[in-house]
Length: 56
Image (cartoon, rainbow, N blue to C red):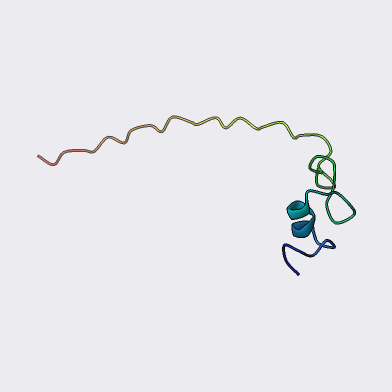
């Protein structure tokens, strides 16, 4: 099952032919993710600086 085998996708690429083992279309989108999800923006909160009491 390698380059010379016309039943595999690798063999189809080697022989420059298309068939059931080698799709002739673009890439498929995974099921369940039909619409691209909007990216969530992350808001960073400013951290208040702690004041250290000096002993003296």
